[in-house]
Structure formats: C-alpha cells, structure tokens
Length: 299
Image (cartoon, rainbow, N blue to C red; front, side, top):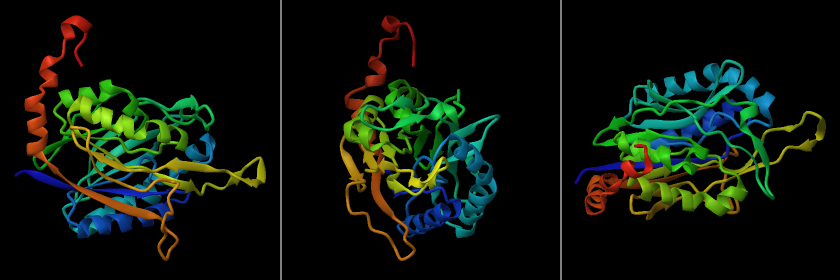
C-alpha cells in the first residue's frame, strides 16, 4: 500500500523572527525523529506584525534573519523531510505573502503567492485589511510530486474559494494545503467546515497548519501603554478526501503548554493512503461529472 507519513506543526508566532525560527527548528527536529516525509507549518510562521507598516518593516529582515538560516538548517539535518511554510517577502511597495516548499536539501522547489487577500471587517471581530500591506499574487502553481503524491499550495483565505482547490485537483493534486492564521471569530464559525468542504469538493487530502494563541506583537505605537491583542484560532487539521478528520491540534481556548524556553508548539501526524484516495475518486468520479458545457467554463 502506497502511503505518506506527514506532520503538521502548530505554533504561535510573534514579531520576533529569531524566536520563531527557534520554534521551527524544534518542530523540524520532532518531525524528522517521527520520520515524517513532509512537515506543514502555518501562514506567517516567520512573524506576526502589529500593523501594515510594521509588516513591511519586518519583511526586510526575513531573508537574512529567517529564510536563509532556515534553508541552511534544513540542509544541515541531512534528512528526508520536506517543509511547507508560510512566510513574508518584500514586494515592490508592499509585502508578498508566500507559501514555500523546501526540499530536504534546503532548496526552495515551489513558491506560491497568496491570490485572495483577507480584507474584511469581521462582525464582532477584528478589522484586518491585508491589502494595506500585501501584494496579491496572480498565479496558481503546478503541484509538486513528493513520492507517489502531488502537493498543491494555497494560503489561508484561499480556502474560501473552491475554484482554487478544484483547479489544483485538475492539475493533478492529491494533497492541498492551506497554511493559515484564522481569527477566532471566523475559526469558530467556518474553519472545520471549510477544511472538510475543500477536501470533499476536490477529493484530495487537505492539510491545514494553523497559528494558535495570543501573539506577542508589542504595543500600539500611538499608545505605548496599550498592548496590541491578536489571537489566532488554532485547530490545525488533517482531512481525508471523504471529509473525515484524521488528526487535529489544540484551539486557542485550550490550555496551551510551553517548554522551558517559553515556546508553545505541538505536532500532529497522520499517514495518508493513496489507495483510499483512489477508491473515493473511482467510486464517485466528480471530475468526470462536471458540466463545463452548462456553466460556460472549465476549472
């Protein structure tokens, strides 16, 4: 039976890139010990900022203080684990929110730039205007083959747009991953539902690594006595193509355990079986039953 052992790391990034890199290294070590072929980490693993200007400022440090040392570290491990991770990189005037896939030799083999930006005022929740600091992408990347599976990349808010997952399935994906930093309000309402829906729609395994807990991002520049409060929902989740949850992480409401360095992180795991995926697709061939002649377009 063809299978793939995967791990999902959940953490709570701060605005301190060095601290966040330290946590990533710990998760990589654990994933390697567990012989995971891929480690999935959340959106914005490199940093969570307090506002748009802060994000643009921090993005200038990512290459030298986070990404380059991370690539060197992956290479030094001399292992067999791929790393899927969400980071920021400088754009022309704003920031690029990207999802990179790093191979075990420490080379970036795919880079996807977030297409759909979270630019909303959540009722009874935060106001998050991603367009203030982020440049949208305009391309869907081809899936990357890892052993007998093909992996398609999305990011967070992309999960709300089924056409992206369907396009990745059409391109050959068996696994689709949406590294995320969901708000508590939208997480409570939609996180599990969306994860299951995209798995069922696309008939792919859906792997969603999530930020979890209250992020340490500093004080309000206009009022230094006011600590900025930003909390992510958590509940990292692995869903099979039938919509069954194979594993999941803690939520922000749980008692999150910290290590001796004061770092919170956890690892969940699952074994993805290709036979299960192929059986579901054979018994219910959704891709063959689509009607582009009726809807006027092909995904």
